Amino acid sequence: MKHEVISNNTKKMFAESLKRALTKKPLSKISVSEIVADCGVNRKTFYYHFENINDLLKWVLRQEAVDIVMELDNALDYEQSIRFVIDYIDKNEEIMKNIYSMGKNELRQFLYADFKDIITSIVENTQSSLRFAVPQDFKDFLINFHTEAIAGLLQEWIVDKSVRNKERTVQYLQLILHSSLVESLKSADNMLSV
Image (cartoon, rainbow, N blue to C red; front, side):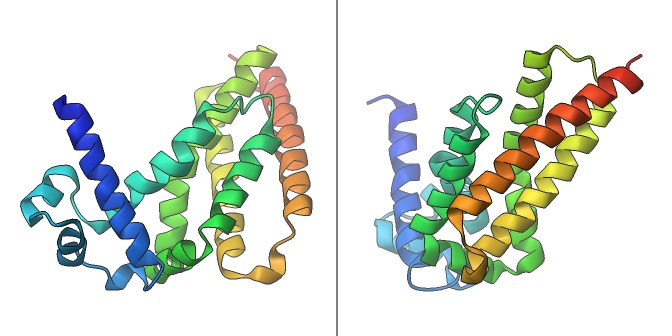
């Protein structure tokens, strides 16, 4: 087997161990020692692949959610992306709640970092498909604005079942993303282009 395949299999083994642990306790209570013992490897192997537990968690979320959403045609089908993310959170409810143990601000930063890539892709694809000329600083502002809003909504979705109405949430997010991005980029094209 090639080194890359072995390395990826080792990462997956650590990921499965972390997910099992997250079904039982908060992220803050999970140690590297526990993960390596569960996997039957030494600490050095873990640190070869990841800096710490949070780094492993980021890898898990990127593999299982963020990278998949990035491959979807976000510019044309916001609904598919939104549904995938919400379904992922619902399917992994206990894991997500135990990730929340990191704290409200930490979870928001965590979600923000990963979902910024998704929003960037949506903004770039929307701008490209509509052929608008928009200054980069405005696109950055738009990306940050929408990422912050979605990270907050996802955090609320994780911790408060009373806000969970999947169909309404998907409909509202799709409407807001489509209309606000198109109109914002259109206005920026007319008013801000240089």
